[in-house]
Length: 152
Length: 268
Image 1 (cartoon, rainbow over the protein chains, first blue to last red):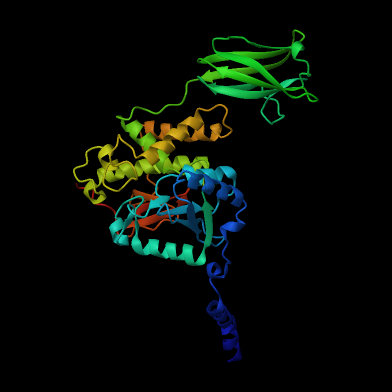
Image 2 (cartoon, rainbow over the protein chains, first blue to last red):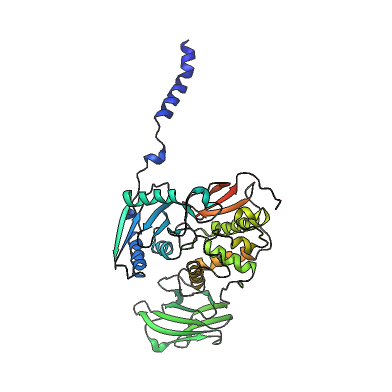
């Protein structure tokens, strides 16, 4: 009998470990844009962007925090009415200039033109996004994220 | 021994490539500090001219030299001190990079690749992955044309232009050959950097543009890596599209590609 139980000892230990294990992603602390090695370049380029709309005296940018394993963070530009998808790999002056001023399709989303009602409505588009997804990102950016205010 | 070098670098440079109409600043290092002893000569002034602009660092004998590339061809620039040659630089002046005419399939595809691909300045950019991404984008366009284009909002599509102009499919290209100002501005700046011999980013952007041209001009498509075919792409980190499209593999140079859940019926 004890021999039979001994066989299952390791199965039992394994099950206990599985039940108590925490997914790696949930345990990873989130990183703030403030800790980006190129934060000064990021700010500098936001200032240039804001200066292009000098008639607006103050611009607000809300940036989500991200886990080390994630490749994207999101930025809501309130006055521009845009939601941006930014790479977490951006670190240098060149990276941040390209991210702000030379980005490819689908990265700077116009909240008035590029948002559809549901995920199904995205269809086969390479860039449209849906309202529930946008809402989630905006909430995360404004409530849990970091705010940058640029004065013109 | 004196030598030419790229600005703010010390490594000897003996040959460079420039674009027609381009300007480039270099350093002549170890040439002493006396301007009256120095002379710069171009073997063919009609191809490229050279000027000794200013003393940059007297102690190290570093001079600023400005080169203007005029027309295509090969030329040698020689630096002389007291009439003795002390350094040489070979210059190959080539055509400026330009895009195919807008009214051609190659012109359309090149512009689409440049507008849609992750920029070479991005932290996500990898030159090889970017080229593969462009090859896969071309597959997506042709797959959509060959297999029930109606499901891709391009009913009655007969050409790839019909596919690309489909409503809300490819940002900024619905009215092609007119392209939205944002995308056109990006394309213009990419080409400008690729042709700017004074821009430290030039080489990366040249490779990017050349890859777009190569893929667009290729007469064949690469083998489709997906069993059911590639039918879409979206920015990595964007909302997945749902419906019939499912992610194919991991993101490639900042783009996530999509295939169909079930093999498409090829009947139109």
